[in-house]
Image (cartoon, rainbow, N blue to C red; front, top):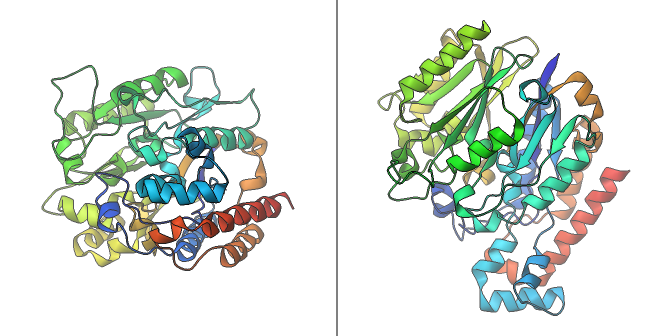
Length: 436
C-alpha cells in the first residue's frame, strides 16, 4: 500500500518582503513592506496540523541558516560576521536581502520526487531544484540535498541526487511545475512536467513581459535521471506567465485522478487532456479533468486568489479536501469555483480556508508550502522521524516560534547584526529541540 506524505517548509525567522522574485506579482507588490515572521510561521504550522488531522502523515523541513555568510565570503567580504553584514548593507543592500532570504519555506520548489512505483529501478528518487533563475534561491539546493539525505537515509531504497547544473538552459524550479496523476497513490502514475521555455527551440512561443523559469531540458533531465516510466512534457502558456503565473501551480493543480486547470494553463490543452485520458483508460481508472473558463474565473482572479495554488489532500475515506487560502473565500469568482467542485461529480467534497497571508504576500499559497512524496508503508517506516509532526512536536515548535521570532521585521533591520545573532540562536535552539 502506498500513501502520500507532505513536507512543509517551516517559515524562518528572517522572513521578509524584499521583492526579489521578478514575475511573482505578489512579491513585487509587497516589496519593502514590514513582514511578520512570528505570525507567518504560526500560520504555516497551523496548516500542517490541520493536514495531519486529515490523516496525512505530515513532515516539516527546518529553515536554512540565514544569512548565508559562506556566500558573502566567496564574494569577497571579510572580517567578522558583523563586519560582513555592515559592509554588504553599505555596498549592496539588495545582495544582503538575498542572503537573508527565507524562501526555502516554499517546499514545492525544494525539488522533484519520483515514487519507487514509477521509477525504472524501483527506488524513490529526489532531485533538489537548482532554482538558477532566482538568484536569491540559487544557493540553497546543497542544504536541501543534505536535509533530504538525512530524512531519506536508506541508500538502498532512496536516491537523493544533487541538483542539476545551474546554467540558464537547465533552470529547474522543482515540483511547482510537476503533477503526478494516477488511479490512486498506490498505482503507477503519469507525471506531467510543465516547462516554460526550450533553450534548443528558438521558434517556441515565449512570454514577453516576465521570464519563463522552467526549462524543458531540466524537465527532460529529471525524467531520464529518475527513470520515470510514464511522463508528459507540456508547455505552459506564455500569456499566463506574462499575467503573473510564474509557476504552473498558480494555474493548475492535480491529485490522483483529479486535475483542476484554467483554460489557459497549457498550450494545446485539449491534446494534453486527451493524452491523460488515454493513460487512465489504459490503467483502468476514472479521470476527473475540471477546466475553468476565463469567464467563470478570470485569470487575474485566479492569480489574486491563488485558487489553483490550493492543496488537494486525499483522506483515508477516499474523498478529497481542497485546502484554500482565505483569499479564495474573499474572491467571489474563486469562491464559486470552490463551491462548484463540492457540488459536482468530483472526489473533492470538502473545502477548508486558511489564513496564510504572510506567505501569500510573497506569492506562496498552500501548495507552495508543501512537497508531496508518495511512499509505501515500509518506506515510511524507514524515514528519519525527527521531522515528522505530531501534536507534541507541533506544540514545542509553536513555543519555539513564540520565543525566538520577531513580531515585525523591516528590510532596514537586515543591516543590524543583531538579527543574524538572533537567527543563529533560534537555529541552535531548534537543533536542541529536535534532538531531545
